[in-house]
Image 1 (cartoon, rainbow, N blue to C red):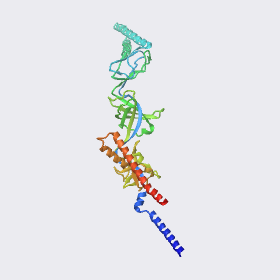
Image 2 (cartoon, one colour):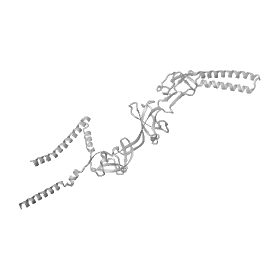
Image 3 (cartoon, rainbow, N blue to C red):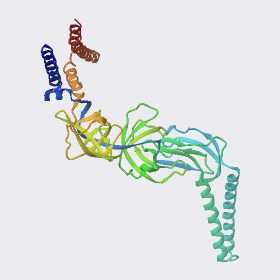
Image 4 (cartoon, rainbow, N blue to C red):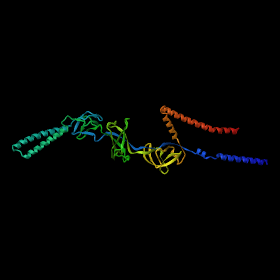
Length: 411
């Protein structure tokens, strides 16, 4: 009988232990909410702002075709002296070079002078014979025609400068854009001697890839800056879009006007940023906020009431850092997840790390009048250290009871 009571007591104790264990393992709804995992993410506000699609191109500053004046050789000549160099500024009428007729051209001039003299003398003699009725009217007309042709030929040579001092002057004030000759060079008739570009009429000749050519149009906004100097960019616009490709480079020429009085010089290398599309008011998010899903759709997540909300979006203009998004359920100011969105699903509990950052940023702005940037940084670091210390103490305190209980069991 005594053994039976012992067995009943042992069984009762075991049953109570099992019931206590099951009851302690049973979680309340509040506990489940506490232990439910929450993804830690970073957010940024959905902004309504201008966005533009741009193309980067490089080129060189040249003189505009309508402003460049070329001086050709009007007769075969020899360069005697050069008084300017490429890239130098000259005034209108300034002497650029001196030339002289080549031996062949000098012979032509002397021959024309001789022919004109003989034609004049022949006409005088024939006129006397005609007056004496010793020549016909037809012979007189032929002599007059020959004399006129000889005089016009000589006048043409002299008008080209063959009989002058050979000094060539700048037709306009500007910059010498082309001068490839040296003293002693023999120049053929019609060959260019030099070119002067008007200083206020420059343009940038850019090379644009063929794939981007379809996006180009006249009057598009362009930002120009030198690749050799640290000057501020200047604003301009596209003047001409080329319609043919360079067979060697595969690119097309796009010409952009250079505003007068700017810092860019003739022959300077430039970088251009061309706006090919622009919207003044678009919903814009960082590019990291938009992800493709398994079906190839573009999605992003926003935060509402501590949970992730999935949105399917249409992507518009894209830059290096930003992207335009459109969706009927998106509005400016929504908190968009920018980091940590790879692990999110619709309705998932999340913890936005951006809130703490915003608080510190606001606090930093409030104390800006009395603190230096370095002081604000040190204070933020101190806050981080304090948070870590509190977390460490909490962790130690959670471990302490378990350790005490263990000692009690041993005792």
